[in-house]
Length: 333
Image 1 (cartoon, rainbow, N blue to C red):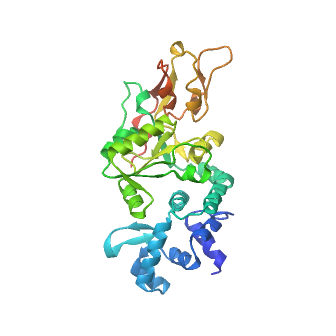
Image 2 (cartoon, one colour):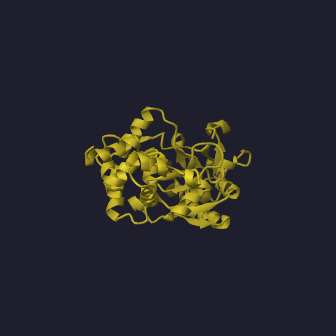
Image 3 (cartoon, helix red, strand yellow):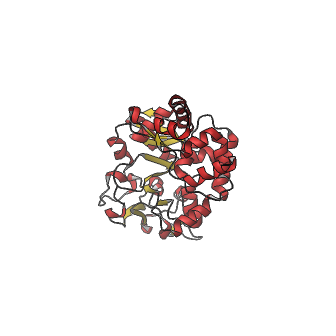
């Protein structure tokens, strides 16, 4: 196998073939010996040693370094720990971007991929009707009282039910750096928190500290997102519409597989609207407007993602979130 094929094969292993940039990203983060070990995975240290002709202790040392770089994940405990590479592009993206020693040129190369090739990858995924990776969590303060808010739709309840919490830097803002929104903003829950703490890419939090991050995120106009499945997920992302490719592609190309809206949609009580315009800049989808000569906010409601950020700055409560989708809109875990 030629050197170039190693990195092409690693790219294919995460379901990306024909990319101009992904093999280059692999080459920047792993050497040829490490690439061969990754291609031999999954397996235990003993299995990998046998497959690659290396001493088990050498394999363990290599695995520790690859874990630190974000390209190896563990399953199980003790001597029977199994090691595997990233399963898909998002796991590869989030893991490697948080590599503590990542040089700026590495992060810039990731952003070039996200700008130039990722949109086409998402269009292909959309064509295959793939279920959305993530979903929007509404800001609970703006929801009509008659609605039944599920625990998995309330960021604060998710925090309350967590056994362990950590925070990491936002991978999107780390690479794109197109805004000044909070960087340390991605909440990791339970197993994801344990992983981030063990790897050294996350800071352990108390529940009060996690709640404060949610408060700061809402104040900064960030959209809460979690995995698109029922129950308490492993992450609460706090996303901006400048750097976050999920929001950017939802807005620009109507991408469906990146993230799905919440079960809610904004409702506008025209008679209560003073036309102050405070909500306009809060909408990440840019669907709110005050037509010339009018005082009533109008909206393209079909594009509303139900985040509720607009409701947090409406002093007259002319904007509220109403439930428009049933509870089974959220897929089962």
